[in-house]
Structures are given as C-alpha cells and as structure tokens.
View 1 (spheres, helix red, strand yellow):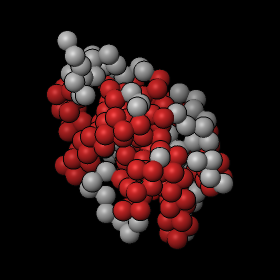
View 2 (cartoon, helix red, strand yellow; view 1 turned 45 degrees about the vertical axis):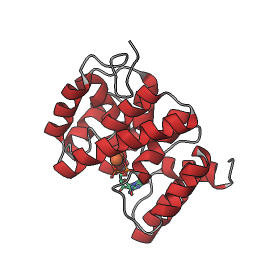
View 3 (cartoon, protein in one colour; view 1 turned 135 degrees about the vertical axis):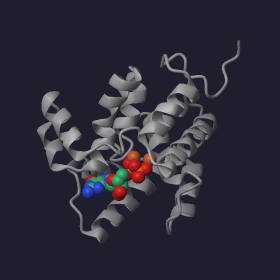
View 4 (spheres, helix red, strand yellow; view 1 turned 30 degrees about the horizontal axis):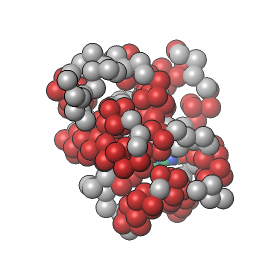
Length: 200
Ligand code: GDP
Ligand code: FE
Ligand code: FE
C-alpha cells in the first residue's frame, strides 16, 4: 500500500490521530494549530527539496510538544539525565527543543534519531545541519500563521534554497534577540557564526 504523507507508522506506534490527541492535551489551542501548520509546511519543503517527507511531517508535528512544560521540570530532567550543565543557564526557548526531544522519545515513543535531532535543533539551529534539521528550523519560522515584519522575505529565502532560508532565519533571530536585549545562548551564536558567511 502506498504511504500517505502523514503515515508515521515507521517511526511511532501511535497513530497520527493519537499523536494529535496527545499534542492537544499538552498545548494551548493556538500552539496546537501552529504545530499542525508546521507539519504541513515541513511536508511541503521536504517534497520541494527531495527530503524524507514522513520524517519531516512527524518532526514538524511534534517539534513543540514540550513547549508548555514548567521550568522546574526542564531543570529536573537536565540534572537527572546529566545533560550539558550549560543548559541550566538557558530558558524555555532553548529547553523545549533540546530537552523536549527527551520527553518526545520517552512519552510518545519516537526513537528515530533523525527526527529527535531535528526537534533538538529547531530553535537554535546547529553548525552542521541535515536537510531534515533545516526543514524543521525553516518550517517553524515561515509557516502560514507567522506574521512578523520580514516573514515574506523569509519565505522567499526558503524558496531559493534551504541553506538560504536557514541563513536568513538565524541572522534575523540574532537581530531580534539583540534588539530585545536578552541573553543569547552560546550555541545560537555558534550557529550564527557558521551560517553568516554564506555557505549557501
Ligand atoms: P516557537 O517555539 O514556535 O515559538 O519558536 P522557536 O522554537 O524557534 O523559538 C522559541 C523562542 O526562543 C523564541 O521566542 C525565540 O526568539 C527564542 N530564542 C531562540 N534562540 C534564543 C537564544 O539564544 N536566547 C534566548 N533568550 N531566546 C532564544
Ligand atoms: Fe519551538
Ligand atoms: Fe514552533
């Protein structure tokens, strides 16, 4: 039988409907709608760029699964699982991806490392990114519900190539964080430094 775009059975025992129910129970209505738009955007980008459509849809759907967990829970997991102690200096913006992948693996039973890495990297990117990593990073930024001053430019960049899209996004995110005068996580700066020179 031909697989549909949203058949995730190779990577997770839960059906898509069961995954949706688990996500809906964890997330606000707005966030729940966002993850479904990221799923669709990730599928579209995977089709456009010849990447794994099933992994892209699944990673897009679950990428913000842990977004509404408490800071206390994230800190407890970082200590208990002996994750990099540098993570303790971060906040939910970083934790819901990097530590959220742990909750996705253990609570949703998704063990595929390509999917989990794309979730881990979806907020801060990475110096080296797979096509799937780039797709989730970019899909999160350009999904049709996003509305920020440069979003049309971000969409055009993503349409040029995944690398152009990633570069546009990390530069914009850095500008945004600096304008807000918030703490920048060191790995976010590493991503910026690796991509700003324009490997694309
Ligand atoms: P969302 O989960 O769909 O809202 O989007 P992201 O996962 O991309 O981003 C989560 C939040 O983390 C956003 O508000 C980003 O601006 C923020 N963020 C990304 N990188 C950093 C960083 O290095 N430091 C801080 N303080 N926030 C960051
Ligand atoms: Fe996120
Ligand atoms: Fe998101």
